[in-house]
Length: 97
Image (cartoon, rainbow, N blue to C red; front, side, top):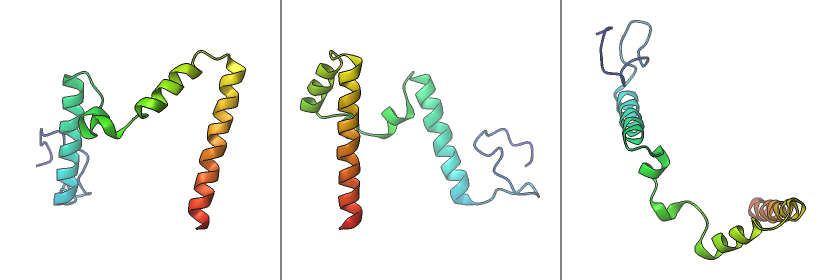
């Protein structure tokens, strides 16, 4: 079926026009459906896939981030550097031990 009209099948064929595998087709179909739903609902795919509480800062951290927005650019940059340093230190500890 080279002229297959199902969009999730287009582009996933080998040189002879055969679908490369069942799991490939299912994965592409799921991605296609999520993409179409996100467009229809005017939202992101992340919003559809991940629970609301799984992403973003906690409430208390969110309050701090809002307060940082009131600082001048130099102070914001200093805080960015502090956060990046703390995250790098955390990663180094994880890798070391």
